[in-house]
Structures are given as C-alpha cells and as structure tokens.
Image 1 (cartoon, rainbow, N blue to C red):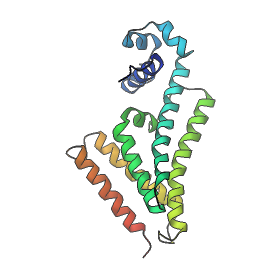
Image 2 (image 1 turned 135 degrees about the vertical axis):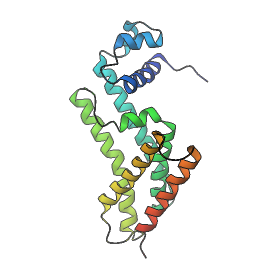
Image 3 (image 1 turned 180 degrees about the vertical axis):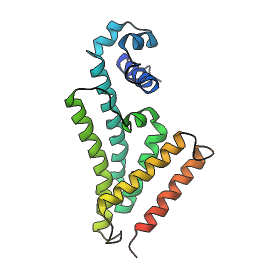
Image 4 (image 1 turned 120 degrees about the vertical axis):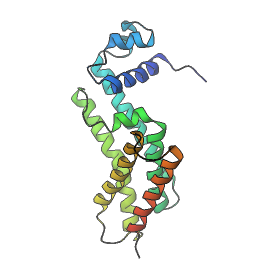
Length: 196
C-alpha cells in the first residue's frame, strides 16, 4: 500500500485532533508534533488553521456526496432509493471521521466562502435523496398522499438516528447486527410508503 502524501497525512491527523479536542485543541504546532513534522511544513500546505479546517470540512462533504452518488447506478427508482440508504450506511461505517465532520452540530470558524460551499455541497447531497423520493412518488411507486421533502427528511433522520445510536454503542451487538437492524428499519419505512 502506498504511503499517504504529506498533505493527506496532515488532513487525516488534523481531522482526528479536531474531533478529539475541538477547534481550540487543534493548533498548527500540535499538529506538526503529532505527525513528526515542523510547523513550517504544515504552513507549506495551509496558510492558516482556518484554511486547514475549511479543507477538512469540504473533504467530508465531498466524500459523503461521492457515496450518495452511488445511488444513481440503480436500475430503477426504488433500487436507486435503496442505494441511497445503503450509501449512507456505508459512509457511516467506512468513513467515521468524515461522518462526524459532516454531521457536526457546530461548525468551526472558517471563511464565509468555505462555509457557503460546505452548505451548498451538503444541500446537494440531501437533494440526491429528495430526487430519489420524488422519482418514486412521480412514478406512483409511492402513495400519492406523501410529501416528498418530509419523506426524504424522515428517511435521512432515521438513518442518522440509527447510525448515531450505533456509533455510541447503544444499538446492535456488533456491526453485522446493527446492519441488520438498519436494513430492517429501512424496509419497514419503504413498505409504509408504497402505493397499494
């Protein structure tokens, strides 16, 4: 396996330090010490902490978007929606630090351009789910009385809630058990949406 380049190493360690100690616990000096480098080598890649944090956040939302884009490969509307759910599951299990960054309740201090880009990318990722629900609704796969936006939010909220419970050791005996619970929950919700 190839050794990660220095910028990737910096981003990975910065993300870990940020998640462990928050914005105030992340300094360029501490980061440099943590990876066995000099502060100057950090500044070679990032002009300041704000730029570093911005890149961490954008990387998280871009990773989430790549996962959700997998849903577009489904053969029919319902398969695409199921792939959305599976993509969320995979993202939470395979990219735990990106998951934590993406769903942070309090955003760090980053410049307005980065924050707008993050918000736009995040909304775009949610729109993928909304579009999958709309597709099922408009083709009358789902009941005519559902609200597309609320249904998409319900599906996201359920996935997020289940993943958070699992990640805090409050759901499932192990990963396989959690995956079974997650998929069963999705199936129940999908069944409640299907047109008669």
